Image (cartoon, rainbow, N blue to C red; front, top):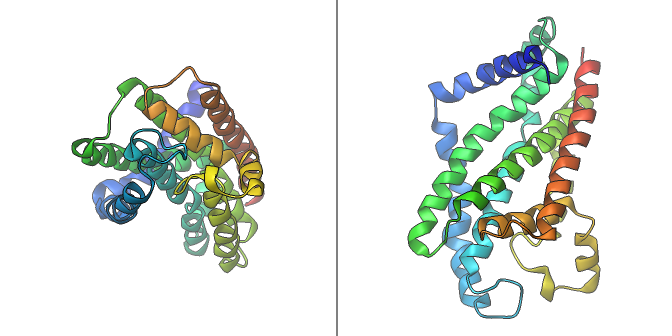
Length: 256
C-alpha cells in the first residue's frame, strides 16, 4: 500500500475514532458482554468440564478466554455495517464519497477503527482473568491479537458490503446477520467443545473459518506458535480479509 493510501486510511480511521475518544462510554458498554460470559458462563464450564477428555486441556480458562476474545471481535466487527446504514440516512456517507479519499481507504479505515476499542477490551479481559489462573504468554498473545485484527478487517468489510447491498431495506441487515452469526459461532466450538458433538458438526466445523480462528487463538494464547492449526488460523484470517476487502471495496465503489 502506497504512502498516499496509508494517509487516506489514517484520515478515515482518525475521523471514525474521534467520537469514541470524546465519549468512551461505548467502550465501557462493550465490555459488558464478554465480562458477563466470563462471570456467568465460565464458572458453569469450569464446573462441568474440568478434567474431562474434551480438548480443554488442564485449564478451562486457558481454553475459554481466547474464545471470548474471538467472540468479542466477531460481534464488534460484524455489526459495523449498521453504522454505515445510519450514514446513508444522514447523508454522511455521500459527503465522504465526494472527497478525494480512495474508496478502499473508506473501508479499511472504518474497519481498523473498530479494532482499537476491541484491542482495549481484549487487554482488559486478559488482565481481569490473570488473578483467576489465566497464564499470559506475551509473544503468543501479540500474534493472536494481530491475527484477530486481520480477521476483523475482513469481517468488518463484509459487514459494510452487506449494508450497501440492503441499504433500501435496512431491516434485512439484521436478518442476514443473525441468520449467519449463531450457526458460525456454534460450529466453531467457541463456547462448548465440538469433540463431544455429533460427527456432522465436527465435519462442518472444518469448513468454518471461525473454527480455525478459535483453535489458533487458543494455541497462541497458550504460547504455542509452531503448530499447523495456527497456520490454518492465519490462512482463515487472511482469506477472510482478502475476500472481505475485495467484496467491500467493490460495494463501496457501487454505493455512489
